[in-house]
Length: 313
Image (cartoon, rainbow, N blue to C red; front, top):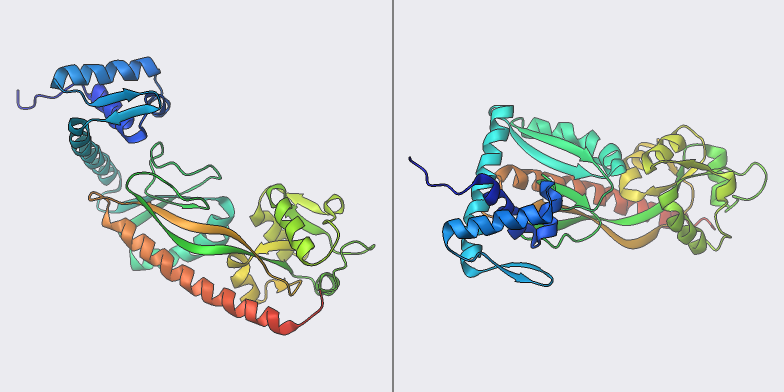
């Protein structure tokens, strides 16, 4: 027999346990019981004749033999995974990328044709989700996250901070909003998503206005829908500046106040690193940074224009 291999299920249990640092984390990822994971790890240790983990009250810590073995086993699984994706897509390489809905719809999707023209051999598989990014339990190469991802072999770069500005398409609504008139009969309705409510309240406080009139506004499921409604003249939306910068430059939307409110909520591009990381991820990261730089320049120009308006709010 050419290969003297341990049971493959035991190898899988070992790789995931070493990556997540716990039997329970491996149990969730593999969809089996904690006891089953523990038995597989014990079986592998018996097969190899080495202790791979130190069991502690707060998790599983790799021994020096376990660390060396885990590095090689993880690389082997990466090679197997890459071989499978290569068969599925022929000579084309794939980046598995996740972003939240409004980022994907409003900012990324219109720009992807440019990436495709530059890198026709790289496929971007785009998944939309609001869940916290976890490279240990998800088959991801890169993602957008507002939080730092403190995981092994994961790095991040900042793209944008969060800057809010009111936007609308209707001229009458813009005039009333510029005067801070959201409360009288005939005032433009505010267009909001529920998770935006704290930001609306912070924005109105900055404008020295009473709390936003949510009861007379229109509620939507996500930010993209509020922007679409604003473009059609349905009312006033609270735009994240990097998402609506192109609309403001083109005139599809107009600023409905001269006030910008910046909060410390960065949008980060997070991605896998390590010696086995495909070079395609670096191409995608560099392209994202280039696109972000162009958007940041537009944001700076818009903020300058708003400062020059000198319209009371």
